[in-house]
Length: 312
Image 1 (tube, rainbow, N blue to C red):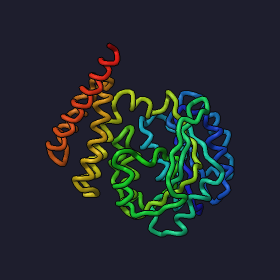
Image 2 (cartoon, rainbow, N blue to C red):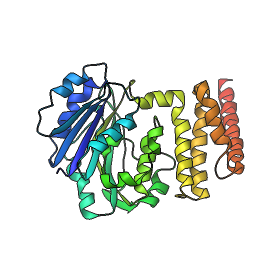
Image 3 (cartoon, one colour):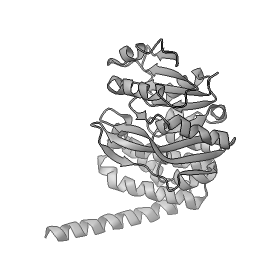
Image 4 (cartoon, rainbow, N blue to C red):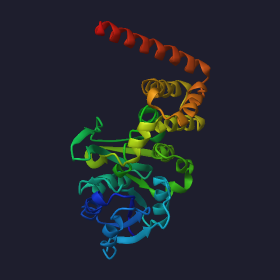
């Protein structure tokens, strides 16, 4: 049985797919199987995938006859087919250094309570320009998962990209499937669910490359405001599980609410009322909402004043 199951869920990424697959096959750590899924792509993806059907590392190819409409449902299909103890979801438009698996698997050898281990990533624009790079202050750090949630998962999702993570499969049967109900932030909730059941290890090395382009889901989610709706849902889910206290909740709420006031004019009208309802009914009480409302209005007024003054 392979130690690691590598899952590549693909949809219309034929342009990047060969580079993705090859970056997996050349890993310095070779005890893995490769499962490739396609969600009824309309480009040449299946041609690329079929060229690897007889490769000794490719254990299964799953081609959907109907589009699932969900990246996270594809995750689940690949996970259910996986035979390894550890899972690496290698997104189809990303690629990585040959040492990614070798580096991340050491966390599980050192710590039997490790639920997932992740490295740092370069964010690459479509033309292979480095837009930004994630970082961690330590070369390696392990911590209790609940502490990780409080420290790194309230304002933002510190695990920017699934391709940067190796995680323990046995934990999957112990977590909620609520992440499947999300379009954009399902991975955020997924990592929280894993983290609360053990320890998290963070590698400070930059070993992963993930692309931002006009066809990826996050571009759509940021453009419509979907991410605002889902990130507040994630924060509420964390609070409802008693993983954080009211002070930590208010910390996350304040950050998200500030983002809402910056972006609200661009939010899709079909989502706006749902987003406003979440902000008007914070789990820690109305005080949190009204305090941040006053601060946001004051901040916007000050910015407007200085803009008018500079224009004059």
